[in-house]
Image (cartoon, rainbow over all chains, first blue to last red; front, top):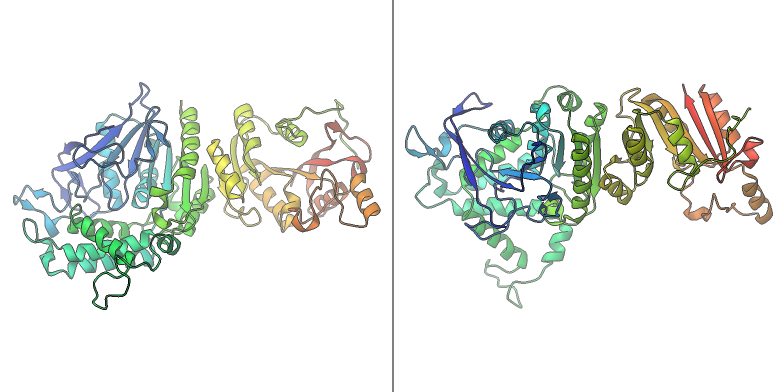
Length: 368
Length: 207
């Protein structure tokens, strides 16, 4: 299945910061067919470094989408039954307007003049896309990590537009630890002289800083177990230590490779803006209880966490579930056993598939 | 104590269980139902499909939770000894404890909690006072093992053993109203001496 991204342009969007962005583009892909009743649409929301290319093979890169194991005929999000939409987030660098986009006022990339953004800004833009596609109500909104934050935000911000939400490996607010890891990544980028106050487009990219940021990220996406299994203390292409600070261990080689590969596909300023949006995210806005914040939600929920995920630990999902139960919302919750840490929702999908398949089938049955 | 006079001597089994048949009879259509220790959600699935109830469940075993969700039942993975605190008062019309009370750490607290979050409670449990249990212990001098209590003492999920009389006493102590009581031996309804003859008891209680 070869899929191509489409881009839709809107005149402007008002942001939580008070600023506005005009115009604003959204890159998106769709899979499957919208049915006549227009009640089989599912919005899939990507995690921090993802993009609109969630499934199928991209003609541009020749690569499968980030959730290709979950979206397609017969898969969890069965494209024989459902119409799946995936868009790149606001502030991203893969087709949707972000800091690398040209500011029409200056003719130059926004860089650090790009306005600060929030998760609810991202969701507002996604809502504009869903309106444009003529979808009255989404059968489901779903995503892992930052995608899960958006799914929760959708359920609260547009309760009459979502029948169900499936937030996976996520939280209603970033913890100090989550903010801390993001801040290390941001500082690594800003400490790179090539970052140059965010003005590096057409020049030397802040590749060293961005690579280090990504290395830290990858550590947080894995688990102690999965790293031991994958790398152990194995040396990379040598019998003895080099005593020269070049790569000794497999794990060093892996992180360096992942870091340098990331530089080719991700914009450093997008890294700054999007991680900040995640850190700002708090469904309660710092006021009142989570149950009160979730009060508008009408959707039924399937909440999933993974046993080895220490970046978005199960207790955060359980907090969400408890608050939903306090509202007497229809919520199912399972903690899935997996060794792959936060990455589990991307790589360890057999059980996740079973849950989602059953949940969606039942939700569609009720909605019809 | 008076047993409910059975209109029919036998109950039809539901999903292979006679206590489910009784529960399926008690629950009114369209009700909000919470099943504590719901296993793979078979009963809730049946109640949703046949009685159009709003069905929720709590189950501790991960694999069972996954099967329940996969069949479309909204189940929360958690411990019923602790897990009811989040629900508001009277969130449900019925809270079901089907063959689970004897597995909880704090049955009295669970009973109280179920009648806080539910208007009515349906409690089904295996009767430890059944004559076979008594005989087994008397004859062997060891922890009784019967068809109803098939486990070795060291791997039994049952940690609080109760009889029909014990439940009646606890209900009285808690000031609960027993609205209906059913006693079963296999598929047969028991009308006489339920403490001795009933294998399974089903109580409908309210506060």
